[in-house]
Length: 306
Image (cartoon, rainbow, N blue to C red; front, side, top):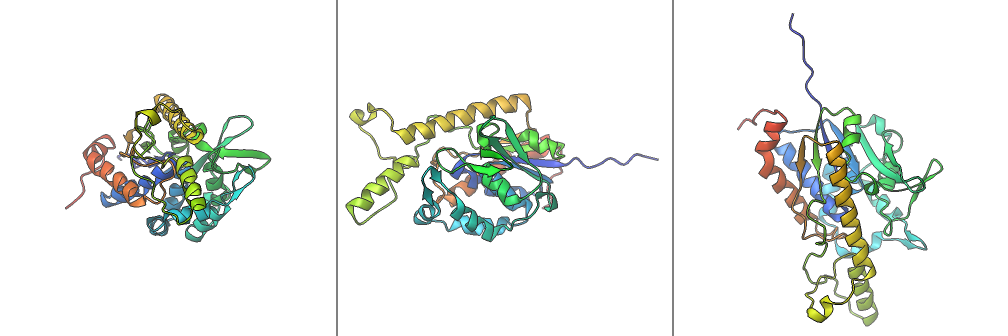
């Protein structure tokens, strides 16, 4: 009697990358259109946020929300307190689209990565509150306040594992598609666009300019004299995050390589261009369509029927 072979479980690891993370939505949509449905989902930072929606069958609601976010709405979500941005308004808005639930009860196995601020160790969320896992995983230092969880202060998982392939395999994936948002960002976090905030008063104009510089969107063309000026604090912060995540991603993939790496072209998007969801989603879809023959070949998937 012939032995029955189990179909390999396909996992998808969604990497960190702040606003570039909306590209994950495009990747997942294009995979669905190609009849490729990951069985297991892991995510870090923005990848955890999108992955939580996908594993909860709530990606439609998330996509509808992010498609209409504008710059002023982003500012409203940034509930600044002494010590950082609390992130509670953002999480309330996310909760309206993705209901909290025990991770172990989701339709798809899901895991998120955070970082223990004291020890530097990575923390895997594989059970417990879905929204707590997302909140911990997106706590980017300098942007969102750390989250207290079981006696530990947790921050963004991208500090230790920007592309959670190992977690995806631990959740049961036999083959892993990794979506890397950090492949082309070192030294290129400026998008080249003019500031998009137009304000009616000098005070608001100064606030606008400060926010644009802080978030990596102050991208006016510089002459030679300006180019010789040292980078500002937030330019340094954004560039440092890019370098760190790129190097850590390379090291982690060398130790635990995924079966396929998808790297959408996102160099034109800044750290906080959350209002550019259409561009990011389109880039994610284009990346899948471009690499679809490779995906089917490497993953040994059948051709889709016409």
